[in-house]
Length: 205
Ligand SMILES: C[S@@+](CC[C@H](N)C(=O)[O-])C[C@H]1O[C@@H](n2cnc3c(N)ncnc32)[C@H](O)[C@@H]1O
Image 1 (cartoon, rainbow, N blue to C red):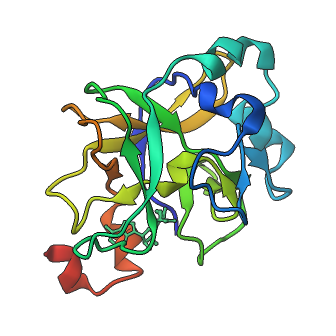
Image 2 (cartoon, rainbow, N blue to C red):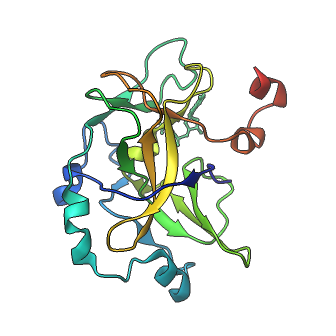
């Protein structure tokens, strides 16, 4: 099942992706990607809709634009519900409504009910949907946790938009308040994501 989303107008990824060097704490068994890759289940028509066949040179400045520094950290706090896993943290103050990074992974149209890293990129009128699965490959965005049990509300959101060259992407943006240096970046995966995984009474808490 996919993590939920809404909409925006796209902007950059950052210099971290240059040279494809994985960031600190990147798990060795996962492939680090600078941009998403297509699974064979995505048709040529859909690839065109997503826009990866458009002029890649136009995205040069987009890919190299400066973005807030973030860091993947292991979570060791007893009270954190994802203790023993990783989270994504602000390595500097992030102003409100700032594009932090894009959610990168494998673009696919097949069902991946067992993936906990599968975000919906788009749904078409004919019912076909494209997901971004970061379970085996992706970037830092795959480490963004859900706010539930960690803070009162999310401090970031998923928004979709197109890069200057026209590529459809899903990105993480800060919400209407600052994210302070050292704070964990937390979104809402949506109730439907949790509903398929945990009892309803925990969701209402
Ligand atoms: C997209 S991954 C987030 C990164 C993950 N923590 C990791 O280290 O790979 C989603 C998984 O993180 C964990 N997670 C995220 N938010 C959580 C929360 N609020 N409470 C408990 N577990 C959470 C769950 O195991 C979930 O399946």
